Image (cartoon, rainbow, N blue to C red):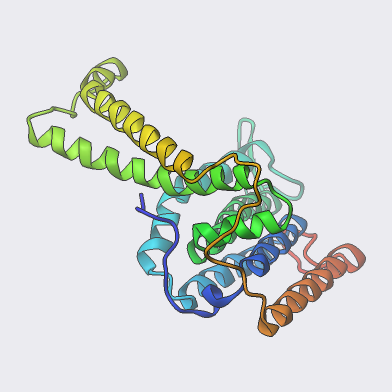
Length: 267
């Protein structure tokens, strides 16, 4: 796990206003769920990779996302192909299993759609600081407490995962054997790590509660922020371009059927 999802650097995505990036995520998800063509979905995933790399997001982070996703993506593809074979001549059949080009294409679309959705969200999270993330959600009407809860979850879940890894390595250095097989034996072996993690989680929660209380969380007075969102002319141009491109793609999809077929871009 990464210690923090946000990677601070200077790039075109980092310089965009957080509200524009949130608009990009919403419009991108709308297009991803509307299109059902395998070639369009491959292009969407490749564009997301290019966007992350040109935004100076490290290849290690992009690889970490794929490492987390690949098992789920492969499982979704296999299950879809097995249970939804699709129409057309069979390429191979055995018992109740029937493989067709349409079934393979639709399974690949669903699997790649999962990856495209994940990378669209990670484009937002990798390039937006926790403070700007809360402020953008507040601007769209989300209560401050809800946005703060989301930001803390994004920050502390990777932190606790890193703490779990460090505790596991420390316990193994002290002679803990984790090579046992079987669920019960594994559970007993991980008991020392679980106890240490529970103590660390309670301490972290206590310190966090004291920190929030000292900053008057829940007070009725209007809150202020040290950092503010700055909407520039470039952000306005990006927002207009994103909205126009999304409207055009959705018009092509629902008016002319572009991207509706799993194998053909038109028709």
